[in-house]
Image 1 (cartoon, rainbow, N blue to C red):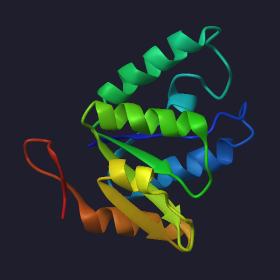
Image 2: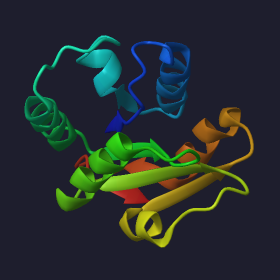
Image 3: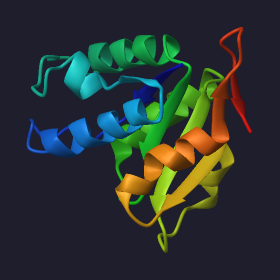
Length: 140
């Protein structure tokens, strides 16, 4: 299963954070894809916002699910999550324990994973996600 990991664009300043989240997804046994890392290579390459979002939509379409950490608010990531929801993709929401999650986020989430420490994420994902033999995504 390929998971689209949405992250905030910060011109590479958050590269370590993105790499860490991608690594956690791989540790859980899933294929990771991050637009900022895999398409943009941590730099601005799109001059036209419409082209950026069209390409993001294409990449979301090619994934089985989208993972978003909503501990901190972000417009761009929320738009990508909305695209995934509209496309019928599974949406996995991560949130640090004690954070407030709005009803709109809960409404598009197929799964909400609360964590105390990011190191908890792989085991939590392994425990609730599985890929059937036909490559469909299920939540246990």
